[in-house]
Amino acid sequence: MSAVIFNEHQTQDGKKIVEIRLNAERSLNALTLDMIDLIQPKLDQCASDDDVVAILLDSEGEKAFCAGGDVVKLYKSMAGEGDADFPEQFFTREYRLDHTIHTYPKPVICWGSGIVMGGGIGLLSGCSHRVVTETTMMAMPEVTIGLYPDVGGSWFLNKSPGRTGEFMGLTGARMNAADALFIGLGDRFVSSELRGEMVSQLLAQDWNGDAARTVTAVLRDLEQQSQPVFNNDSPVREHFDLIQQLTDHDNAAEIKAALLAVETEDKWIIKAQKAIAHGSPLALEMIYGQLKRSLHLSLKEVFQQELNLSVQCCRHREFPEGVRALLVDKDGAPDWTFKTVEEVDPAFLEELFSPIWQDDEHPLADL
Image 1 (cartoon, helix red, strand yellow):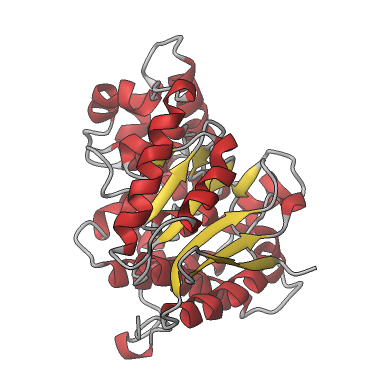
Image 2 (cartoon, rainbow, N blue to C red; image 1 turned 180 degrees about the horizontal axis):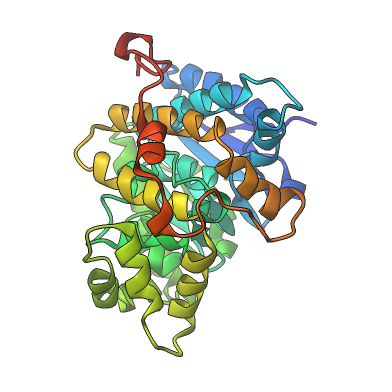
């Protein structure tokens, strides 16, 4: 069984829409290196095929578009049970694929229904037309495993309204469809039951004009049809002023202290408090620092910097320990390197950001 299914849909005027469907429903379509190595050449081929007018990126099952990257295999390699070069290979090819999607010359429609986390957001975020539904649940919860929001997170979180991206990265807070639309990770809300109608309408279009506008027109119509089931409640938007207040500090320790000092019965804030209290102190400093360092970088520079930081994380104990506690042994008791944010050694943190490669030797130098 192939990890990715490719379908070619013929339009009424003789063109093609190529569907790329993640096919690992049991693992919530977690992104593997095999998937990446199947998708990349297909996108490269379709980019130069004049008959292909658009790409549809979706997945098997209704529970998840993609629940993240294959961090368990990463853990095994970090623990000495697999190829020691696997982390560098995985992140290099994953980020290259993400960058390809961000810069793709044709419309890429992502059906972001169900769970979309980590590496799944990496795929979705760069698509030209990102569809969310009533079942969409997004998050970048890397703080819980000693990592940071990668896969372009340093790019799109910095472009979210105010400092909402920083807050979402530090707390791993969950987002619904309305949240995704508000912070800029979704473009259109379409009811999940209209997926088939979306495909039918796309195939019925005249594709001789601007392809992106053609896709937008179809999705706009479906969004209007979907309004009766759209829940406009966005916790991120509703807490915007509070988020601005809590993040208006000079370091991660102060932000954490400010959030934990809030006395509330608000369940959304309580979840954020629990996450930041139990997350990796080193990851909090890393997330805060990475967002600051990447604020004015280009997309290419962001992926190059993220590759460096991700490979560095695989060379130290924090990330594998977080994966062990949450996803392997599942004891929920990670032994973090530093017990508090205040204890994080600045020299150790700086080592994580230190470059591994010279500029011309960087694996993503050719992006």
